[in-house]
Image (cartoon, rainbow, N blue to C red; front, side):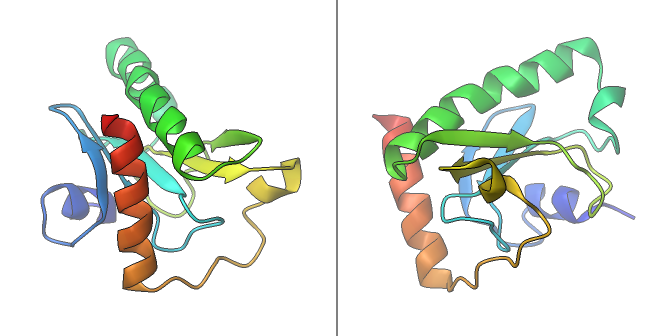
Length: 132
């Protein structure tokens, strides 16, 4: 059975897409730690990020870099934190989260409650910054 992320990539489950190319896909987390929380995934379904081929692994981080810069521009913060946890969905992924202190990247904290309108606005801001 396809992972949740593979179903999002295929369009079976709707998402607020930030960027996409032939190998990678970035979209807003619907259970964010902060506004602007983005997930970046390889399109190939591999459970652990460390099982990706060296080319896909390095490509994933290269794809992530301009998205992180767009998040920082769209949601002013001290840094864009990056985390690889991979316990909830068996599909390698990187979390990009606007942070102002280390605890902002604490995944045991309650997630924000966001509306579809809030997600759409966050998507607009990041995509606009990404395309500028």
